[in-house]
Length: 284
Image 1 (tube, rainbow, N blue to C red):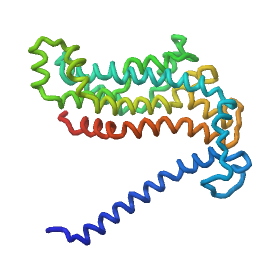
Image 2 (image 1 turned 30 degrees about the horizontal axis):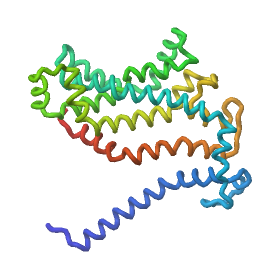
Image 3 (image 1 turned 90 degrees about the horizontal axis):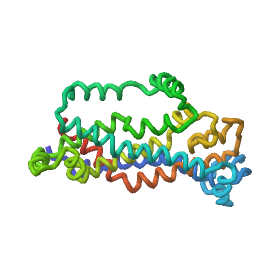
């Protein structure tokens, strides 16, 4: 039965109204954070809703660098981010390619085991991992934060790559092998250039997780302030290690962490959606 135009119009209006309402609800915390980051200490203490402060305290942002060593925190965080991106773009792609195209012994058993690790909560592994790194003397260092990421420790990324690589037509793979291309050459020259959507999606995931990671630095770095990341620095503003700052400074620090993620997502959202949907819709 053909849907009547008026009913179809009302259905679209209802859908867009619900989506608009949901978007507004989701935007309120961000708008409140932006507003509070532009208020003075006295304005924050006034208990009334004021999204546009008067006056606007833009000096909160340069003052933040006086309250906390932001450059050092940012540098420490970027070290972890770079390690995460390398692991996501090199070891994980190689593992995904191997599971997708190389019929090595035990492949059909190892891949389900890899997927099973995704179902094991990370909190279950925290204590064994900490004891291991403590035994080899790597606590209070960047070692536990960098090495697993460099080695491509995320099974979800490998799964996405494997699914995407299996969807590439066999004719392309066979043609490259017949022309004398090695497995490494097929991965580098053929598959990697064709995998830009999933590479971009995984890069966004890796950047987001490393940029916002709080638990791992807290566990392995602890009170070593020269190794603190941005997440630990933000936590320090509210009571951790004896620090306590005004809410406007806390929100300014929060905006310092939010803005890079907004920029990355804004420019990469198209690739993120394309990469995830392509990996999920290809044959398994």
